[in-house]
Image (cartoon, rainbow, N blue to C red; front, side, top):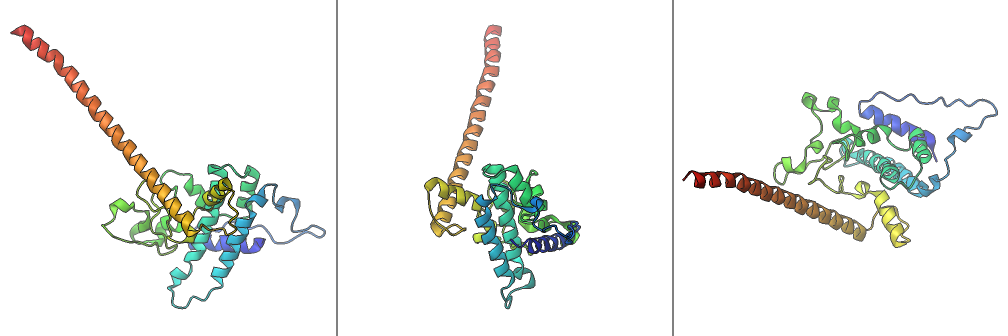
Length: 264
């Protein structure tokens, strides 16, 4: 795995987001000491995620070497941010959501800069669970000290209004219901950990990393079903509270009526 390439990418992403560059380890190697020392060796369990990580690295190299004719300068960099998001989300979900990798494997990915540690740190905070890129919340990148429009919930946008964040191409990554299941609208917005776990449960031997059209449609349908269930549950709770309020009101009115009858 080309570690130096990953470190250069991490530095470039940090600088494009307006963040201070993380201090990089020295490339000098003492005589008689291999660059691939014990500290840098992948821990046991890394082989579980390595095929996907290698596929994403290969995809990133391919996109960076593609000709950019006919594209805006910012649009040419969208795949870089999107693959960075997808790779980081994959490792994040495998560790925090599915518990499929160990802390050692997760820390190794952070230490070797195979994932975006700054972006992952934001995902752990309320309101940033689906953040597309740290550049989207860097006020230096936008006029009047604001953030990207992709951070605005869809229900607060004008009807039919479509947005795309200029740095990453994000269509909307605000937390809460009503957001896009796939924030980029392409294969880089897919949740690869969920896809891999679903295939394992079905004993599917599909070799490609990204979801097929059928798998993506199933995921979207599942998301819509869960959304309907949440809405029905919320409506049921609201109805229950309303009935309870009416009963309490009747109970409070009953003694008053009884008192009026006694007075008569």
